[in-house]
Image 1 (cartoon, helix red, strand yellow):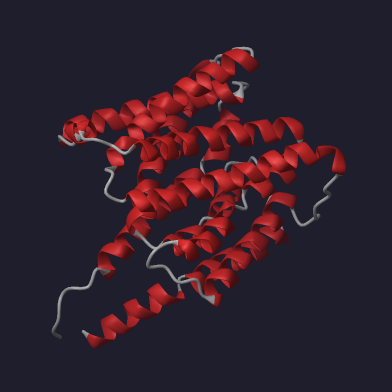
Image 2 (cartoon, rainbow, N blue to C red):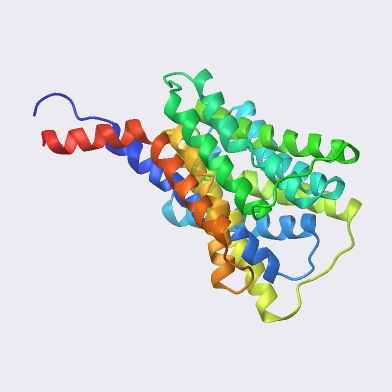
Length: 305
């Protein structure tokens, strides 16, 4: 076989790295449930601070911290901090003004928005299989969140629904726009996390009453949140959306609520049912359909070798 080495393996590797964020986000529900009665913005401040500090320590140990001293575009700072804090602020606000099931589903339109919005990104092409894959994923997510009982949108919660939709656009916009700053090192996510922690603390002091975790288990849950779903996940997601297949990442993100539900069932926090089995088929099938191009190219390459 001749010719220059293909960039496909590195793109595939970056996609797989980005997908580990989805796996970590699946732990969010369990860790949050175990963390006790800590208010959302206080929990956000605590966990983002931990996630940011871990990132700074790792960057220092790797010797990559000096990269942050380079000129980082102002737009990159606005996108990073706006994405992390903006999404969480809007999501928590939506939960205050609308039922959790409907608000969560509307906010979780962001994978679909990533896939469809990717058509506007340089070098990306949107195919039927991307749309079919993300549609299957969303259908599976509806089954999981509603437990197969359907949705009931009410006009009195219109404000909360609108805020949830804004959250979806915020996270999808952050993910898509981050790709335009692929040269900005992922280490900068540590600063995004620290800034988000400070802004979350301000929101907490303005809107909530402080409640500290009680006992070792709750403190360990908070630490787990800061280390994984509100820590490492944002670093690997940044790498994935900048260097991987963002369409496949978007479609496969619907695996998070599925994995989360399976974890809750295993931990005795939820019950298994027919809706989970069907959702599993829809979400995994949708991800496979969306990844058609990547899987086919990979298979053809292996056959050629």
